[in-house]
Length: 510
Image 1 (cartoon, rainbow, N blue to C red):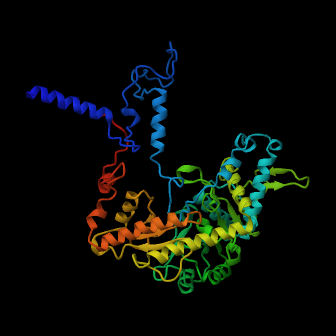
Image 2 (cartoon, one colour):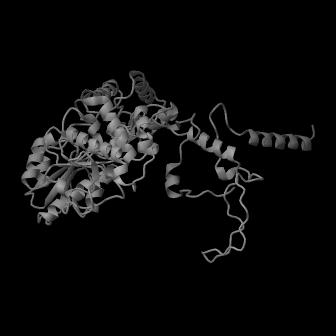
Image 3 (cartoon, one colour):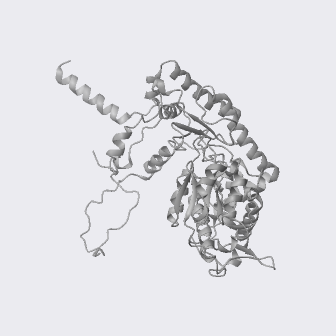
């Protein structure tokens, strides 16, 4: 075969390979929609516009640049993309401080009832009495579970609930003539949204150090409190972001209340307490609850969050509106704007994420009091099982058992050149979503693992086995292997420094 013929074969082979693509089995190498060759016909046949003057005053574009792909290919494209998403329906999702657990399909069925899924927020209230009854019942359930009688379902997510809670505190201080109270006390291990929320509300943040024990101590709190005259409140997550219960929280709350401050509890970790203890019993005045965590409604890529707040009877007059009110004739209505003069007002259009309210109430009713208590017990049991199995393979920064999540670090692997990131990428190689990494910030190389109560012994054991293998490979000197992971995933590691410095923010044709 002469050189020209060989070149033609090579070119034909290249074209052949380009057509076949890199897909093997069901591991789709899916192109960007813009990279598809333009179809000769559009899926929609519309008449050309005649004598139309653009309102922008510009000339009409001859080439818009949108992809022109036939309907079946569009459908297949997005379905194939959907198979690349890792979700709780794909496997274990051990994100610490995030509580990614199974969403029972019973919840989904209830949320899709026509009387819930097909209503409109502007309908007359007389036509949505069932929906209002659901919201009222959920208010009562959350009040019972927290011991905090004032409940507003409006906030759209956890951070929005934080904002609502702290604005409630601020409103109370302002109407009571305590405008001089400008300080909010926050542990250094807190979720980053806590100090951000405080600053958004016009407060100054004073940190409480927790590095030595992973917990608040009475001594550290007293030092941060000072005489308390300028302290409006504190924001504490309990159990905290190190997966530990705050043992001295009752004494700390008492001191705060004596100084005229309010205790805001971040409810991100309520899954460890639900049905076991009411936050009001350890001094909480205001608390948001992540319905999408504790009560299993979808979150992340799976659906909107929901962050209702629960408050004490003292603070109920100041919380946002509206709430659902049950009248003497057994009918339900939404509180009218301005009806509660001391309220801080509306924080959101309409009444919150109603579909999440249906799912959460379904979850609560299907479990009952004993079932909710078992949720907390099993979540704590599973986390301690993970900790007991890995404590000899990884460094455990704080002594004793954990609550619903366990905290490890890469300290034992550092000498081999293996980092938390390498361990997380190794989990990806084995088809497992990594745990939360490098958080909380007070612990170097942190790996925060929350198995939740919905995982089976088998799925937790596989997570443990992969983590043990990673630790063993690091100890045996196979660091390079870990540093290259994942090697079997559709995409390899990014050059993260380059991605941060030279991000590609828009698609450009080749």
